[in-house]
Image (tube, rainbow, N blue to C red; front, side, top):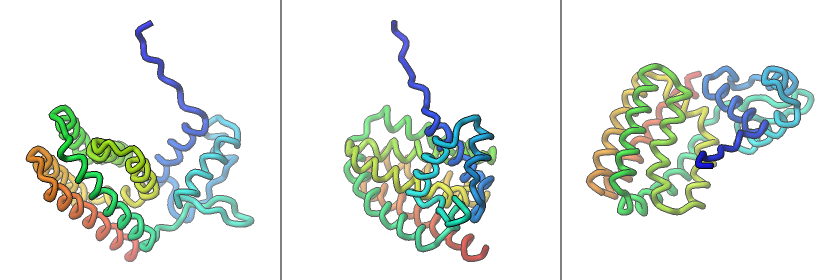
Length: 219
């Protein structure tokens, strides 16, 4: 047999993926109760995988458990956003510092293709696909460092801020900024310029923090 076996997702993984989608699209808005029975019925599963998926989201800060209310989608917090992005700044700089000298032509091409996919999804206004392709774009670079513990930690931080990222992607002007930043990052990566790559990534992050902070405080 030459076919590659692809393990189907567990019920918990499937529920978690769908709940993340609902959070990113805003269908589950901050402050909204998450009824386990309703989610289980909607997805055709028992309450067990729903409960386990909610525990994962609670650990990431996306939902909170309130006595007599059950799970509720967490409110957006500037303090939380700032803390996570500060940690990202430290770890992403190290990942880029190690990764850039190791980049081969195939990885650079994959990064460029991912940048195109991010832009295409943004032009369609598909925030779910844009979020997914954006993650692919950045982690092709981070993973090139060959530091799996660092990559895992960064993924946890990114998981904790997908909702904030969708707020940023929701603005047409912000999507244009993403397109520009990604193109600039691809350019400096092709030049193997470590310092410039770290600087571009920092500007990219800072623009997101500023825009999301403004959206939260004005809401």
